[in-house]
Length: 247
Image (cartoon, rainbow, N blue to C red; front, side, top):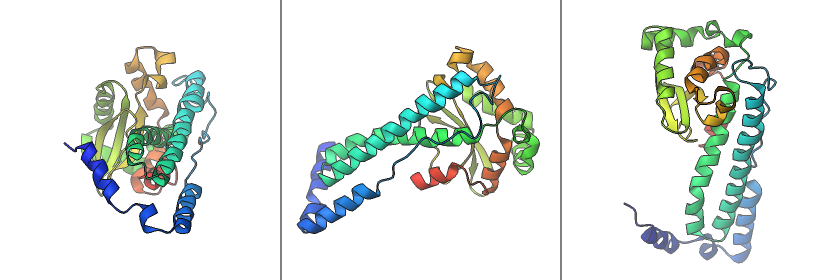
């Protein structure tokens, strides 16, 4: 286990910016850091709040998007601003203390930005598995049938303890896997999130109460298979760019 006290002493012993740069150089460097920080904003939905009814209500969509996702964006920007101040002030303990807030709120922003894009109105052609022929073929090759895949994915979603996400990911060149992530942890490493499902209570409770199995059953009606196909093929230009840029 890392001794945090020793870690701080080690980092403090390394040459901080203020000790290796002149006063003017140090001020210029830190000012550039502050001015170059990215300010994240809430993305627009590609559909109206009521577009996913009756499977996801307009009330849930508005609250989920405008309140919950906005809170992740707001808190991420605050955490990043504070982190810059800690770097400028050579405050190593402050930088370490902010890591969890950046991870949680950054993950929440990434995950939700992906989530909105992998949903579509049930009446649209994009919400039909036929819109993802190559992905569907890979799914059938991996799980034997599309129905068996849906069962396996739904089982993984309902097996999440507490809050988290379920993902279909592309692993390596063409392999597919079902994975889950805790809280707002995003998919990282070499895996590509083909699509994900939010299993936090705020994603379904107002409509389904404690019946999250019904939420899982119904979400299949509004999966955007066209976006999933594009992510699988590597031709998607949606929020996955945010994920790659944020890692």
